[in-house]
Image (cartoon, rainbow over the protein chains, first blue to last red):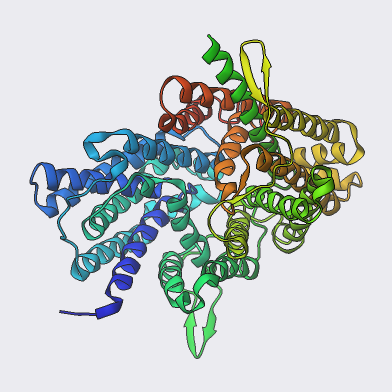
Length: 301
Length: 290
């Protein structure tokens, strides 16, 4: 079995964060940015924890239940926010996370303010690898599928997509549910590694971390979120030598990357454009939008 | 009944601070289309600027502290506009959101490095005195904070409605391209807006520091999310709408604290946010198209 010794927790958290980022990426593909990632992960965590601790359900079925619950919550959020303009949508999901956090805080059955404890260690490096590979496979297949292409069309221009016969509402529900399912699974796996789930884990600021992964890495391809999650999980650890300046450096690096590359580190290369890097040709794949084009269309009035 | 009136007044005082911070958000959001996540931290910087000034000049503490709060916050606001918000203007909103969020992390942890992560005592700029108004008892500090907040709210309202720059901000919020075509210096107005909103937040921060007698590098977190909620519920079209919602939020919180429990008060705000936005996606009083 693989072992990273001292660094094992970092590796495990990197894998978990990559899984979460991929779930969020699928949701974001149709132009919805969920600010409730942590809340959905928390639902998965709490549910799987209650199942394994209070009902003696084995680990795998509990994870599957968390996945289903995550999908349902995601789908519900998509329905709830269907009418809202895209930007407001994101912030409403924020309120959902905060409300769930307060609910968990006041619900004694799941530990309330004292957090839910008593979970058994079920997650190791292997489990995390399986979860990450599963998420990668889903994201990769979804990316190239008809649905994935339609989702990107919805993101870039809902009106034009609808005119092409795409059901915008249905696509948003599908992507949010699929992303939610992956996040719910990741939440369950994480809960059985951390062994404690506390209400504050569901809040807005935890969700924000996942969004930073996406924007830092770039959300035009699935490699962006992966790179973002890996870099930003390892970075705070790597910056430990800086001691109290650590978080300042972390914030400054985020600002610098946003200024230097507003679209994120990894960008999608448009169709017909090939790029060479050290003799290797890149640029296969479907274009969404050229990075050089103006990002925002004028609102229809 | 007395408890009700008492909590009502306490709620008004809290709500007035939410309103001032929320207005900064609303201005930045409508004029620059930026979710200015560093705004609550600029508020925090203003608080510490006031603290330093009050300790340095004890004999004129109150006016000097208020001025220093405005200057400190305004300066940071200016720097933020020049380095992050300005260059990213017109970009995707999420990009600027992350940019200001990074700044927020830097400001919070930078201040925590300077003053320590724990709350520090704020100098007593006003005497600790209780004032009876009928059945209600308020402190002098509460009254002063409330009065100052009302003044600031009136100031922002007057800025937006009466001044030339204020009119330009509304034009930009409606249609930046058309405003520019009519000769509005968009970058300049954006800069003025951010500096103005920051300075107002800085003044309010000094008053809040006096009210609670303590200052912390992480004080922004408490106000940020609440103020943000107010702005979303109200929509950003009318300054007065945001103020009204902030007052209602403050009162509801105080009443829930008084009658139910203090741990439930946060849930109320967020449930209301989801409900309102579900029924009226652009807020109670309407938003500018984004």
